Amino acid sequence: MVFVLLYFPCIATFVATKNELGSWRWAILLALYTIVIAWVCAFAAYRIGLLIWPV
Image (cartoon, rainbow, N blue to C red):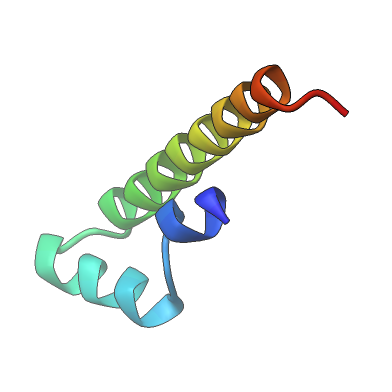
């Protein structure tokens, strides 16, 4: 759930970012950045959850 809340939401947002910033490079970098941040936060939430309630 943490990942879904943070990752790059949809292709329309991707194209809007490209149009606003004027370059596909910035849109791709922004998409990769949000995916990495989402993965790191989801991994941290999972690990913290295991510390609180081990399976």
